[in-house]
Image (cartoon, rainbow, N blue to C red):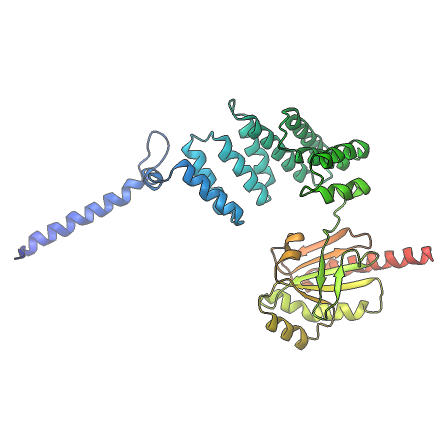
Length: 362
């Protein structure tokens, strides 16, 4: 049988639980000697270093870099912020996020750990070099020199499992116009990994060192909605505009009339090609939209996102202009065509350039 407490007792019981609730809310903000809050301790109570690293690697593989970074930071915290392994993964994740300053800073933290394994030190020096190289944007000679020094220091550690360092050193030498030295390093990389992931890129740079200094477009090919196969090689000698868009994207849709006008304006120029690269998921919607809007220039549905990944497109719309040599001369993201005022001028300039070149050759 349940006991019925007097009303005054019930009020006291409710007050007691209110106090408990307030205390519970206050507990997480209590600072511990280590600098952690009680909330952090409770949250990490059941998380081991290995758990955090495994989760981070899984998020990294799935391209969820922000989530991966959180897990690697947690793992590093669990080792007193001095885990060479966790810091190394943080550097790689920052590289994936294109946060190159953070790549350099985190790599330096690995290098500063006295008892870090040699392989971790070599990897950290390699990523430091990559970060500096990216920050240099092929122009800042001081940063390119610093990148070269990092790559050479990594090579001096003689870690056989990292032949890619020679590839990276070769490119940074080419970017400094030291072509003979750069080619030697790229050839050494090819000896170690003739079928490696970057072997084809290395061969192209050996054949044409300018590729290291200019923003050459990545190789790509598409089969258009009309069944035509078009590759970058087929487009050599032409000025190409790639329109990365989607029917779901309001600025993309708003730009269609301007793109129609652009196509009409340059349609008589044999040197000009406009290609639409759609990010749509539904083929039927895409075909219906392009037909209704009379988008009669070549259209491609990038189902696998392969072309988008090749050009690192993650904002829509994105417009890219490739010149007759295959070099990217212009890129604009996130604004409609109307707000990209200089784009038409860039196209005119390079179409005229190709026309003059053709006339001179004839």
